[in-house]
Length: 42
Image 1 (cartoon, rainbow, N blue to C red):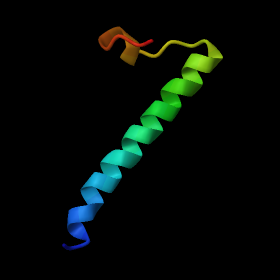
Image 2 (spheres, rainbow, N blue to C red):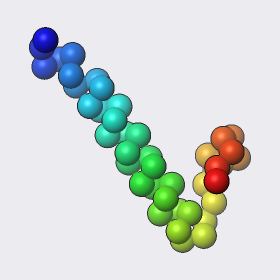
Image 3 (cartoon, one colour):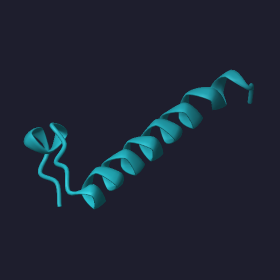
């Protein structure tokens, strides 16, 4: 197993966590995300 095979899954995980964090902050501040118009948000 090489380092190159680990980079893509780690990057994907990081991006997903950052996106969830951003959406949570918007939800707590009462703002709605344009993303919620495409995907049904809570």
